[in-house]
Image (cartoon, rainbow, N blue to C red; front, side, top):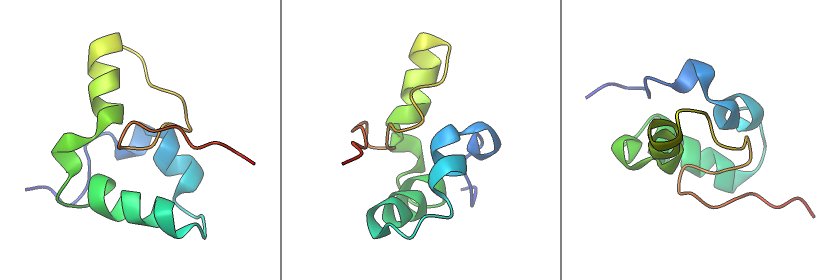
Length: 68
């Protein structure tokens, strides 16, 4: 199994949140972008289904990050 998602270089979620201090985002990156849930990424599924990337704020589990 690869160590990183094949779409990491073009994933806007990863680019936007990779340097964040938010522990939840770091957990998603560790689990989905570079971990065991890589093949369960809803961002990847969205891209395949819609032939375009999802919102930058869509997390790998499909939920949207809401700014407060």
